[in-house]
Length: 168
Ligand code: HEC
Ligand code: HEC
Ligand code: HEC
Ligand code: HEC
Image (cartoon, rainbow, N blue to C red; front, side):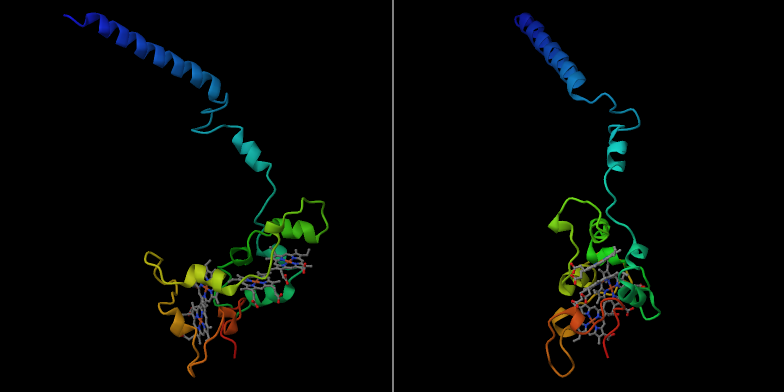
């Protein structure tokens, strides 16, 4: 065997790499990793400490009674399945601010009047793979045109956003 000593060196290198890996891992992997599963156990407490973002439709009722009544009324075609925050975004920051609680200003989290073309299209444009029974608009252009040929700009030109019913 002419190359025997090479095998010895190769083995040495492999053992060296393995030792480095074990050492580096012992330094880099946090102490509580793997205690409860393939994650840091303390991550649970950290996430629990974050402020709540989604608060639920009932929390909007006191201040937006008009919208709430329409949304929860018998005419609502969504039958309350699509909640306020699905269209308006998480309301935790907005409510804290409106209640005058001391919070960090963050304009991205302020609730604004949304563009119906954006929010409604998210669920009602035709896409393959959407659940059966979810109403989808195959021809948006045609749908947005009145029978007499007038083109409308937005979904809310014809639909009430909070009952979805078509305006008389
Ligand atoms: C403590 C009272 C209060 C609660 C609770 C509240 N809001 Fe508001 N909201 C307001 C006030 C006051 C305004 C007007 C603020 C302004 O014009 O700057 C407003 C404005 C809005 C607007 C923007 C309207 C506009 O004209 O710019 C939206 C959308 C909205 N709220 C949605 C919600 C939703 C969704 C919830 C529940 C998650 C909610 N609000 C809960 C008081 C509240
Ligand atoms: C299906 C989507 C959707 C849901 C669900 C929804 N909204 Fe809206 N909301 C809209 C759209 C779109 C507008 C903007 C209407 C427009 O352009 O005139 C709007 C407007 C508003 C406004 C501003 C009204 C104004 O005239 O300034 C408030 C306040 C509001 N919504 C509160 C709520 C509350 C409270 C709920 C739950 C009870 C809710 N919305 C549920 C889509 C929705
Ligand atoms: C989060 C997804 C979602 C958003 C956003 C959404 N919808 Fe819907 N919509 C649905 C689903 C799901 C149904 C079917 C409800 C059912 O089966 O009871 C529906 C039903 C409807 C219907 C009734 C269809 C029928 O004939 O029964 C209309 C009209 C409608 N939506 C209009 C709107 C308008 C207008 C907006 C925007 C203001 C909007 N939707 C935003 C999911 C959504
Ligand atoms: C020109 C007026 C007009 C505009 C604009 C309009 N719609 Fe409609 N929409 C209607 C009418 C009228 C109906 C009910 C008649 C029918 O069943 O086809 C309807 C029905 C629907 C339905 C139920 C369809 C079904 O198959 O059951 C959905 C979902 C819907 N609209 C979503 C939207 C969305 C999303 C937008 C904006 C992208 C929008 N509409 C814009 C007039 C309009």
